[in-house]
Image (cartoon, rainbow, N blue to C red):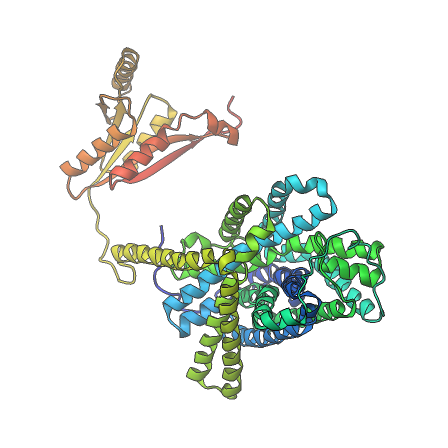
Length: 629
């Protein structure tokens, strides 16, 4: 197993950099990467879908102060939109400064130290995983609201949607972008149309969706709002900040874009911020224009669609598009987290298999790991959104803050032209996101956010444990040092056999070509039948006379692997300096299902030898072709 502990000598480069220009490899790699428009569909679904629950979260908090409190919906939304603008501008700078991706982790690792970088990475991982679970459960909640009979099956529906999104992402980020481009366009188009139509109405076209539902409005008046105003506004701001999750996803996945990757990613980031800001402010204007009040069992977005379009086909289009996009918003995590995990694996903080990339530019192991952990969260929550929402958005604001502080250090250290303005922008972003992180954590602490506060340092400790393990392995292998010249040593090859066949002949032939001395061993278990079989094997062996000694091992138990490993261990002690190899002959059936017919003796022996000795294990495959009957 190769365990690279040294950092790569070059930074991530475009496809085909080290290959001849005429191979076509670069074009093949580019075909499986994103355009700016595809990036918007693949990496912005989380942020886009947040308009379905961001404004509603604000309204539900302000409703505690009655109708007076709802009047602050637009100011709170404008504050969130201002923070969004700062974040988008800041992440454009992050993309330009760190075109290899990684976002907060890459910035913090370089400018704030290893530990801070791991905190940023852990916070993003937690938020990405929670985003999958929250998005899927929210989408299923929209479906079960339309079809109440499905409520009892919501967990299975959540798992089915998760399997669908995972399967699409295993085919590649471009394939997922193509699959989700139409739902994204329909949702954004329907929401913008709803805002445009609603702003030209003097009053709601219909209130049918809210009719018959109990109001969620509190009884507070002006006095109550004055008493709890500061805390209430902070809580509303914290709740609405859930709409900002996903803004960082583009910066994390810059390598997924076609060349010029950084420029395309910046365009995607700006388009995401513009669309999200327009939709958030537009929906808040409609809430004030229609004097909307939250009711139980009906979403704010549904009431706004009813008020703008009326209770007709357009209303159901908005609802259906919202349901689909909420369910598919998990795709943002599938686009960003595997890339982040690959960077952590490259730096030896996660198992190296997460750095492997399939033919379609897919970090397959990262996709599968995200799906597995998200499935566990869905099972834990029972498919209930309210169980997961209090944990949401905390991690991402920790990452936001760390990233902005790191960028201030970046500009101050390099001091390029115009660095003061750039550093000031990132400093403002650090201040705003830092305050937001404190507010979000404090206001949600009693609702379950303490789990994130505990999980984050545990994840950082796990990163450190993996890194130390790789360091120990690298030191033992003396990686980074030129080893001494290879030398030839005496070679002993042990071949376990259980009978005579063509497989035995080929195994001994291979063994004699590998070693100076070949020893065949057979395990004879206690029992009359086993003794008779062993005696027959010994007689046949003498008649065959292959020129290789057959050694009979007679354990007191019916163990198979331990007697062989014990013999190999003793052989190594008696022959110091010799290289011992265990060659295990096995058949390779023509059909996959035929592997069930095998007794797995080779696997048992290989496991015991690997566990108990330092011998080399060689597994000889004898293919059973289909033409043999």
